[in-house]
Picture 1 (spheres, helix red, strand yellow):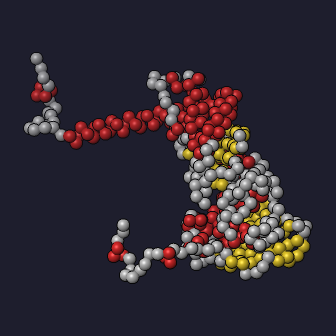
Picture 2 (picture 1 turned 60 degrees about the vertical axis):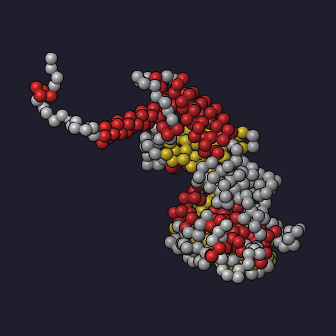
Picture 3 (picture 1 turned 90 degrees about the vertical axis):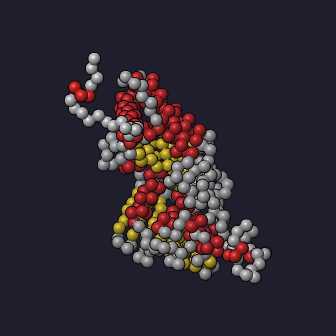
Length: 429
């Protein structure tokens, strides 16, 4: 059971060997477990954790503006005009609720469906993890006619939550500076921030998000009334689309809200984004699987009914790879208590594949029936992709057979005939 020689002499493996990390110590000891890495990805993940809370307020209908500012020292401030984190005393912790949210793992308002019916922050570790991995964090809350402030260092409060003024506004302001002792990269990228904040704005119609970079005086403002259909147009810019307007479908299956927009272009690549409660599920999940399988089925059904698969000598079979050539799409679902794979929420595991499939089968089938000209154009591209794939497969097989014959050689004393004169190389009667 292991290499005994590797254990120091005299070392006893007993109860004294078991260390219990209290509070946020575990986060500082193993940060990658909570934010994915201590490199550039993890650094920016801190911003997403704070912004997610503000976006949750927007999805709940309590906020419509979020601002993100990168300061000269690479600290970041996130401000929203939501309700503000509660400041009253927590019944069991005997501390203000805001302090509990900032210092206790798995503390938050997302564990039931009463405070937030739909949310991206689910585990109650987001802002407390940001606090633990910052050498300085300042919190300002406006609610109930007052302004409240508190300071932290490496996850620990350095001041008490105190009232510092009066205000008629409501909202939360978090300013944090990532701890350079934790992170390999310390500089935030304006392009990375703007790309993700633009996604948030696309996914939440009418939400205004501003980004200000005090290091370079760059600014950006995002607000879209067209939602994910406008998102697809943005992704397709610079390409030749097969149809002018994106195909848009939305609906509700049980307690799952589904929104999908797609548009084909004349390229051969695929560009699909999948989101769950505005979280970018970069590794896909059940919502993406449902969309892809339904898209393939619907296209095959229409093509078969229209007789498009038998127009040539050989019947064509359209596969998932064929329908994804030139596809640009955004799949967005909202559901209570989603199940993600890990704290970084890269993959959705909730069992909603069938819900998405059903919606796409219904809505896309109806759209194809009403817009048969565009449908034929799209399916024509899919058929071309299928034929190209089949031709490439036959070419590979031919090359392999030829290569096998060339490399096999002739047995014994036999050799290839090199004579060109028919008299010497042809059998005659």
